Length: 242
Ligand code: SF4
Image (cartoon, rainbow, N blue to C red):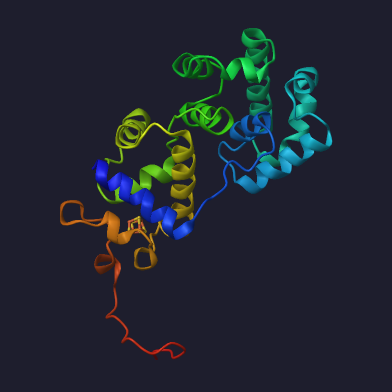
């Protein structure tokens, strides 16, 4: 299993290359993005972040001063804006109460303690907190999301009912504790899930099929299972089978 997790990373990196996550200019912007991206596309988050930038609110002190109603109006493109404005405010209140508004002080805290504290902030779940720790704090914490679970469950490397911490442990026990590696690996899994391992996986075009397939872990969507028609003959490039 450990070997497979490592080989999967190698194959993903070789095929896709670096993903340059997280797409943000500052640590605070990463945190804001991690909170806003819950249940919406990144495109919508970008619109909301753009509004916050224009309003000069992408720093803790300015976000502390704006009232929740005005904040909600600015982040409207990200959806569930009243709830998300409340979550941003909850995080800001925590940051000022515990660390005097300083992200530097916050991230100098022991990682396990900080993770526990952040999980107590209203509205912040495992994925959001771990994204903050990894992508804003460069802490070696692996981020698990629905894409990660789907890819692994398709190959029976996990059960679809496995809990967040069980999947996270699989990665963290299989890999060296390296924040740069965790950063890249999560981003690569997201890329794979968006381009190949979609809800209807495109196994025939998947760059990691040969790594993940093994007789002991036959993928649910192995090409020979999803193929419903006889294969077309191999033709030279540029010609189409009729
Ligand atoms: S081989 Fe198929 S099921 Fe496996 S990761 Fe690739 S697309 Fe997903």
